Image (cartoon, rainbow, N blue to C red; front, side, top):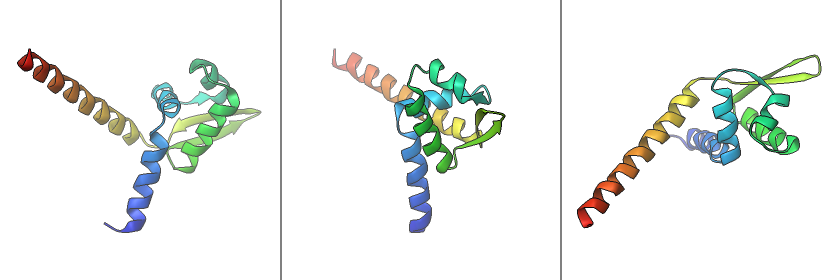
Length: 106
């Protein structure tokens, strides 16, 4: 695998690796949302949300469109949700393994 591809992968994973961005993505799981809906829904300041949206857009995770003065964001490719779901499944297995180990040690 070439260094350029590894760098691109790392940029996408960095863009996903922040709790506020994950909140935004979970909100967008149900479809496109106006930025005016996003920041109150995740209880963050608008300037902070706008910064995170711009970073994910630059990484190719989000797309936006302007309608009048409103800016709407959506996830460009639903594969991102498969990735997030895969991480959740990994964490569940990890937690279950730890519970099993704890029971064995008790």
